[in-house]
Image (cartoon, rainbow over the protein chains, first blue to last red):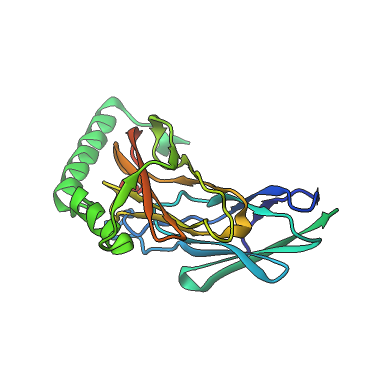
Length: 107
Length: 159
């Protein structure tokens, strides 16, 4: 199953401007503490890691726990240094991985 | 069509069975593990070690009354120039009564420009949420917020 991803990055920014980045990815974030219909615990299935790179250089990273709501939303900021690609990668339990990128023009 | 029709007697018998089943489930179900204030202190100590934890510089923004604990918006902002010499290296968020005390760790640096993050979290009960900012000079600052939750998240079963 491919995860649905929503990214909000401004298309244009002035050099040195602080831009806000918002990310949303579809994922159940099953905590591993819930009991299913058969009385057994539902195994944990969460995203554990989120990394944002700006033209290949890491600018933000987050370590997620079961306490993050389903369909994790993460917002943060970075400085628009140069035109290029801002890439996002998520990874987690059961070999989950997803990636997305956005391009930005810096004037 | 007919098999979906039920008489009052069948309905009552059915609901009695359901109630008995629910009662049984509550006896059999294992009480879910809960983080305690001590576990919270332990988790914080793992991050900060022996360093003092100072109040201030951190703003933790959470609604004080939450109807649904499954998705509670949370914003952490830290007062910092975010320069090469003086910036926030990490923001940690902890809670008191979810099954585990950890919520989120965000790693940032001078390229962030501004130390402000936002996400949505699950809260299993009315409780205190703590945010800790680790600074590049090795100091730790914190803020906490009390949240009242009316519908809990994550430890509820699917019944």
